[in-house]
Image (cartoon, rainbow, N blue to C red; front, side, top):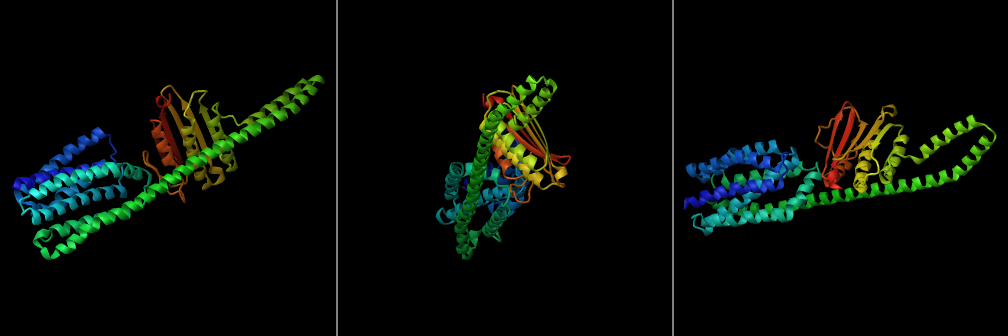
Length: 427
């Protein structure tokens, strides 16, 4: 019945792969990821199964970390979008869960199946799909969101999981398989019982981080809406003041014209025009977007920043709520970054261009010396002591909702935020 053992090993290795791929984020699209995984992991799995057939399960169990775990770790690290703690935690968690299932079915087969491998095979046949069902149904969506939103704090969890994996592998296979060391079985059972409790603790902590992220995100949205509404109210008050002042301007101009002072009237009219432009704060036709620009233009003026705004949008129907979120968060981050610079170094520019296919937004601001952000990466989400923070995650998420992309990077002492959204997503 050794063919059942070999088949169960193949089944286990295949499902370790599935569990991990359900939870990690690749830097390539799905088609390319599946292709690279197939040509790399397929032969690796077959070689390990062949090793079990030739050398036996006990020998390969002792060499499994070297023959399968480490090579797969290197491969998935290469194609993973995350290169730090969250990747290592996900990898070790998938391997540990699979190793737990393998250990439980091994012990069950030893005591209940008379080592005929029937109990082992049936146990793995049922338990691995159950684990994957739980991962898809309860874990995958919030876990992927958590990896997207939380970039720090994963290291300690990754370390705990890696140590647990090593502990389970050593206890199960060294110096011989655990079923040959009956005096150590009680401690081994305690380790098996401890693992679900450990992961429950870890996921409770991670879930609380996710709730904190959602709360902070909601606060950012509400703050952006509050700023937009306050700016609209301020604009209305300015317009009422302009209407009131226009009566006095009309009287003055009438008097100058009646007295034949045409040159003085022209000069007075120019001054009125400049004053009206300053009061109106008209940056674009869309009143909602204009309110955001007015609000942050005032903040930038208070910071003494040199501000350049180039808005090339007309009266098109735009998703103003989402765009207000993008602009508010981007400009808020720019203001935070400029506060840490000398007054004469504070510069920011905003460009917004609408075409038939795409809406493009670029916010560029001076940043502190030494800040380096690679294109496609996000800076730390911890706002304290950083130039750019939590709002970039909101920008990225909102851009994705509009079938677009967000990129940020540093170049020549500037932090650049580029957002491109598809016009087809809101037409």
